[in-house]
Amino acid sequence: MSVERGSGRKTAFLAATATFSTFLIIALVAAWSVFYAPGPSAREGEATIVTLPSGAGVNAIAATLKSAGVIRSTDMFKAAAALTGADRKLRAGEYEVPGKASLRSVLVLLVEGRVVRHYVTLPEGWSSAQAVDILNRQPILTGTIDTTPDEASLWPDTYEVSRGETRASVIARMRTARDQNLARLWAARSPATVVRTPEEAMILASIVEKETGVAAERPRVAAVFTNRLRSGMRLESDPTIEYGITRGVPLRRGLRRSELDRPNPWNTYQVDGLPPTAIANPGRDAVAAVLNPPSTADLFFVADGSGGHAFARTYEEHLANVARWREIERRRAGLAPAPPEPAPAGPAAAEAPAVTVPPGARVITIPAPAPAG
Image (cartoon, rainbow, N blue to C red; front, top):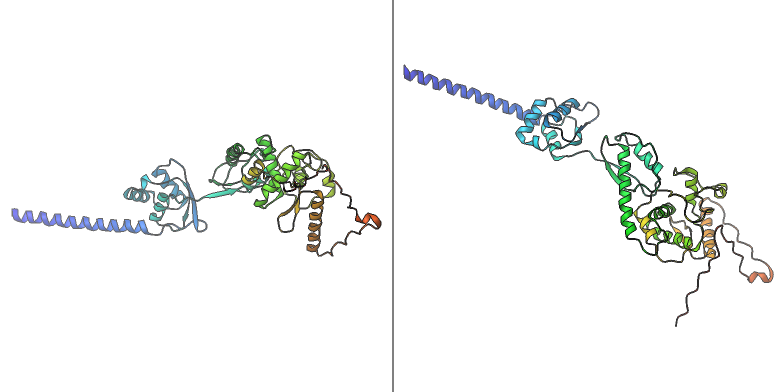
C-alpha cells in the first residue's frame, strides 16, 4: 500500500510539473509573440509623436505611451522593460513611433535614444525682424517674442531646438552665440581695422554682408569701406537706405531716386561715417573681414553681371565699370545698346572729360608707383 501511495504521489507530481511546464511554455510563447507582434496603428497618419520628459520613470513612460496609443498594455511594457534591462536605459526626448511598432521596436527606439531632431537656421545677412519671423513660423516652439532684438545682436547659424522650447530661449541662445563669437573675433583683430569698438565692427560688417553674397569678395568689400572711412568719404551703400525704409523687411524692388534723396539716419549717401545701427545680422566671414581688412587702394565697386562686383581705385575707373554694368542691364532687358557719347569738337577734343565727383566724396589722388631703380 505504501509503495502504491508513493508511486501515486510521484505520478501526481510529474503530472503537475508537466502541466506547469506546459503553461510556462504557453506563457513564454504568448509573451514572446506579444513582444514581437505588431502594436497599435497610429491614430493619425503613419506615426505618433510622443514626448517623454526628462526624469520620467518607467511607470510614467508606460502611461504616456499607453495614452498616446503606442502600446496596448502598461504592464506588458513594464515587464518587457524589466526582463530586457531596458527599464534602466530609457531616454527622454521626442520620439516618432511608427504605426504598428512592436513592443520590442518601441523599447529599442527609447533605449537607443532615436529622438526627433528639429533645427532652425538664421541665414547670414538676415535682419532681426526676419529672425523673429523664422521662429514664429516654427509650430513646435512656444511663447512670444515681445520685442524685436537689436540688429547684429543675433549670430547666424543653425540651432537645434526641442518641441515645447520657448522662442525667447532660442533668441537668448542666438545672443549668447553672438557675444562669444564676437569676443573671439575682436581679440584677433588687425591694427588695419578702422572700427574702434565691437559695436562699430558689427555695424560695418552688416553693411559688408548685405553688399555681396559672394563670400570671397567680403574682404575686398570691407577694404573699400575701410578706405572710404579713412579718407573721409561717405559709404554710399544702397542696403543702408533700404534698411532706413523697411527696418529689415526685404524691399523686393530697386530703390527709387526719391528714396536715395530722402534723408533718413541710415542713408549713407547723406550721412558721414557709420549709420546709427547695424542693418542685419552679419556672419563670421563678414565680421572677420572688417576686423582684418586686406591692404588695397580700392574705393569703388559695382555689379559686374556675374553675381560679383568690379572694383576700382579711381572714380574714372568706376564710371567705366558702371557703364559696362548699365549695358549688361540693357541687354538683359532686350534694349538696344546705348549710343556712344559724342566727342567734343575742335581743340578741346584732346582734353580729358570733366569728372563728376559723387555726393559725399572728396577728390582722391592715388599716388603713382615709385619708379624702379
